[in-house]
Image (spheres, rainbow, N blue to C red):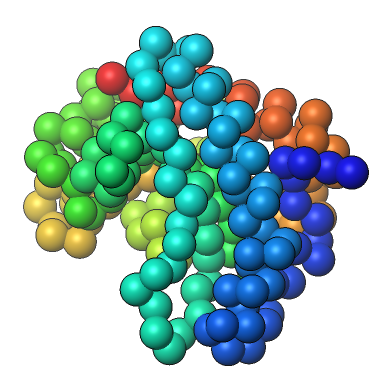
Length: 203
């Protein structure tokens, strides 16, 4: 039995029609792993940074009609929420497992928070080839950093400062069939390696 990872059938929870029915599928096939990942990586981040981190598993409580197309656990040092500060995420869409770190459009002092990506620009653009940038956490669309010019990256950073809905996340993704999802050991190792790269931008 695996405890942390997701199987291809778990991703199919997003194919279930109806809000209540999909939430039931997510509660059964996805939320248990998110809760376990929340406990594991809150401890990992605390050990690594010396700060207390809190896991926030998505509840989708405001939804009344449309079923969620993604779900996640987010990590921040605020036990009341995560959206207002840079944070880490582990989550799923129907066709994608994502691990992300960055600044959401709802963050306070976005211009200050995103400055770390300017200060660490060379580290950002030289991340391994499978790292990407997301300009919208609600979309599966992400662009590999190695396919972006320096100007593209700078424009993405500036957009956070100048556009109300602007946000920026560094991301790493897996397909539902990826070998990194076959075992807990491989999956945890993948996330730990990813977080290690993300922590270069955490302050």
